[in-house]
Length: 184
Image (cartoon, rainbow, N blue to C red; front, side, top):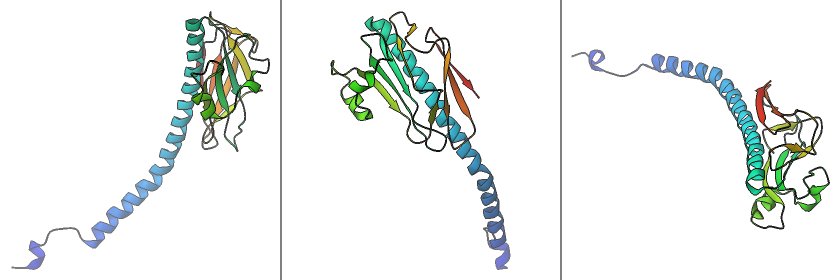
């Protein structure tokens, strides 16, 4: 009996060809996956911002009180960042320097949510992957009927971008505080 006829398995050449094919596929797939992941993070952040604005709108109606929203533009393409904060706005005028009453730390806002003297209800920071872009920092109030009060006149937009990919999402916010997300 000949040993060659009874042996089973792969030759070294076959194993090397399969390893080379795996390396080629990984070289092509990894950059695509990274781009997909960055776009997914960006889209998720856009929907989270839209959700926070819609949540503030429903809280204003539920509590029959004004809710203020501050969108702090602290990032740029080179250094991501920014934050959105929802707070009780007794004066229904988010533009009157309310920020001094809040501690900008995310944990401080969340830890004191149940404290009635702390106006901060919800805060979301964008520190690592997403940048908020707008013409300027934007603060506005939503009254109990769901309308924007003491904010930018007419529809305005906030863009979310990333230094990792060229995609961006733009949130169009109407005077009735409806939010529409467009990809750029």
